[in-house]
Length: 49
Image (cartoon, rainbow, N blue to C red; front, side):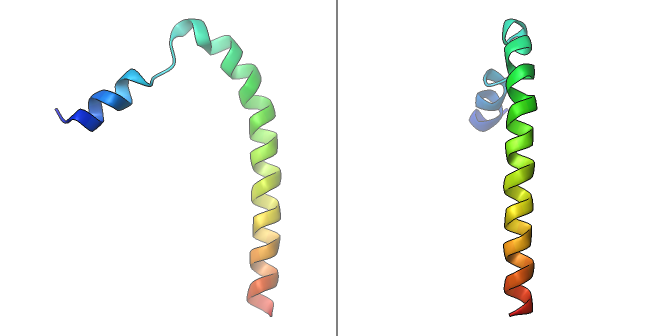
């Protein structure tokens, strides 16, 4: 087992963090979707140019 795999495992959220992270995820996901939409628009405009 490599060091990288072990580090990844230790970064898994603890059970106590789940509720807080769910709340954050909903808002974060909305922000990420908006950001992706903007990037896609810019990318498509760049392709047309």
